[in-house]
Length: 403
Image 1 (cartoon, rainbow, N blue to C red):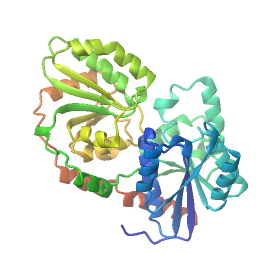
Image 2 (cartoon, rainbow, N blue to C red):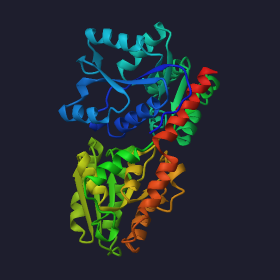
Image 3 (cartoon, rainbow, N blue to C red):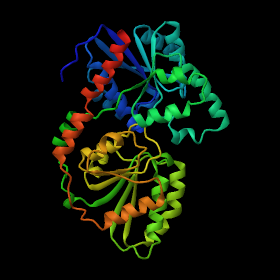
Image 4 (cartoon, one colour):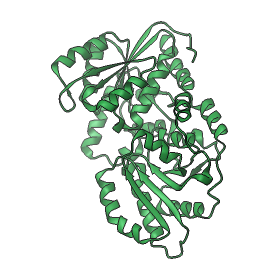
């Protein structure tokens, strides 16, 4: 991949505490951002992260992922708190960087990096990572709202606030509408759409035999994401319960749910699984947390991917599904939906039980063996969501910064 030739020297330090496999889309998007930034000529990129969150498999994965960027690790003396020795290491990394790119203020490392960055007069970028989308802020307690108000005061002192989608930007502006520094905050907003590494995944699929033909796929619908209410899994469970209790629904359909479970999901699933098992038409299977290789196998054995999300700053899981030749069903709160809705293989649903029920009924009456055009999907992703595209967007931000 050719580098973009534009600017003077930059050294960018991306600070994110957890890039383990359990952090799911966060780790993937972090690596892609680092790759995109590293393609800008004379730009060195390093990711600073905690080694406490990583296991042996994670370290092996990181060694494979670090292309054109480097990694730096710090230790925690107790969970989330960097050790004294690590503080000196963090100080050195920040001192040797020109731009400090911090992910949200939900970890002590973020505050520490901000303070050190300010003391060393470094340029600071913030990445809220979806935490100020309406799906999250609508449930904020009074104390959380007060805390976030002061957090935004700190955001206002940075150079840029970088978001992943217009949906995230809209929610950020709406949430900050009554903030005393709203105008300043909005002026600092910049957009860098997340990307998808089509070359890396093509290589992975070449080395593993996967099925692109829907007539040979066994799973009709899959939900594969973190099993939390914001992702819409509770709504899906309610819809499946309604279908199981509908005596008129007699279409056989196989549905798989997989991902890292939350306490809320586990409680609701255990409550409903007796109802699910009694229905002879709906075959509903829960797979739990799955490995990277099993994830791709499940996607390549599925005809539809469903994600009735209440708020996703981007939604890398939807792109993974499309790339696997799996049709995608989601809400208008999926960050990347404003891009992928141009494809005929993407369908919207409302955030209601009835909408999901009707969509599953619609699928059950369709010819489910019609396969998407995989070449068309790949070309669309390459044209609209490549690392090069993300690099160009970051280049504009840095170029603006140099003017």
